[in-house]
Amino acid sequence: MARSDIKHRLGPYRDPEIDPAVFAATRRLLIERGYRGTSIDAIADAAGVSRPTIYRRWPSKAHVVYDAVYPASAPHVEPSAEPFPEITGAIAGILAFMSQPEAREAFPGLLADMRSDPELKSKLGERHSVGVSAAFKSLVERNAETLRQVDAGTLLDVVSGAAIHAMCIRDVSDLDAYIDSLTDLLLYGILKR
Image (cartoon, rainbow, N blue to C red; front, side, top):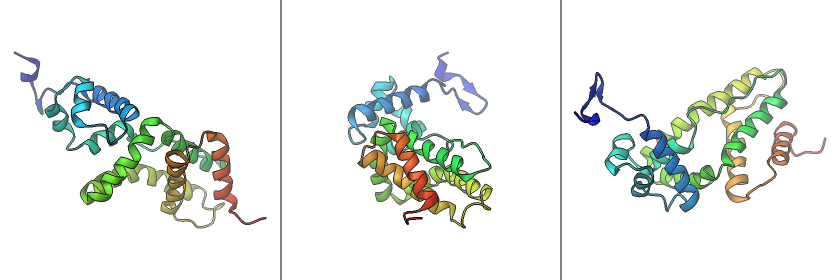
């Protein structure tokens, strides 16, 4: 009996090595070819699996790329008695992620696909926002006595928008200086004190 013929109580055997191989191949192809040059065929070939194997797990290239590149949870930020270290940590986490070559390559293509496909936008947008939005909401709530009343979603928009622009458009190389500058801007604004 072949391994694929073995049935588990919930269905056919699923090789646990396939997802990591597909994710590694996807990340490598994004870096080598960019989002547009990465295809399901290329991913399958690089991962050593068939196209149907990929399509059984993901309905489209965008879904594979998203799962390969974006973490399942938001970057952990250690709670602090002061907002400065927490905001710095949140900014650092998002910038560290967006500075990865595969994230830089994936984001513009995923965004374009999401803009032209409302269902994809809804599904991936919700998955992306849930963890990160909850983390920012928690940060704002923990620091309510120190921070002005601010919408956590708007704070997330500012931080993630700045990170995307800095990494995908400006190619900021000094992350530490950028983190300090953005944290200072968020906490103290642009008006002279």
